[in-house]
Length: 342
Ligand SMILES: [Zn+2]
Ligand SMILES: [Zn+2]
Image: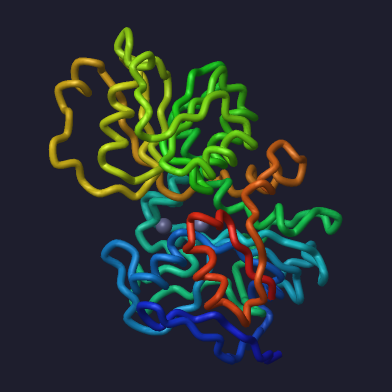
């Protein structure tokens, strides 16, 4: 069966286009009719700069890794046509040393939607029809709000970050940078029983959203945090989600001795890393990258209403207006999460 599909493709810096392609389903995997997709920071980077970090667009690539849709055809009879599914954008090889220990996010041959890390690049999900591995499909009930379910991927990122910290139940938590990921971290911390959630950001608007997701205290990034520095630091766990080098230094200051800092934001290197403080306070600084089994948990949490991400929803566009959607999504004064409708 061959279908024509319109896809949102990035060709380089500031160059996106909707092109017509063909998809041929030959009975293997699941053919999904994509209904909706969320625009993420990496999509924006590819659009604004033609690259994410060192991964530059060298050939046209379909954007998008936060997508949901309905099953058209599947090689698994459990997945009936019309079944709604959230699509896990990670396709790990299943065979490398990391896959064998279930650290699939570290897969040596990971094919992640909408990523220019590999050549040829891995196409994303901003297209009308896509064939995916059946294991990438996580079913959810048709009665649920699609606008909510599209948050499964960024929520999975946050659940993994919290797992990297060893959980946050009954802990004092600091979240530095409350863009969409920072705000979802607030929601996860709240739902996980954190005792206190203090957030900081340069944007008052972002702080208002953090408030809606459950922050206890919101601070502007240049506010003094003197009280939180006392006694070697107030927080058991800090999440650095802004990516600014100075913000990690601040996390090091306000995290208590033997506490944990999770670096979530894709930050640059710190010129003067306060190594002595890290040593003397016995801090654990850990990275966090994408997610593993947390994707299914994220779908569960959204389906059960354990977390409500809708305050972060800033608007939707037809996929035909992907250019406008990306421009709006890039305006941090106005937009948090922008979605495309297919
Ligand atoms: Zn994302
Ligand atoms: Zn692997």
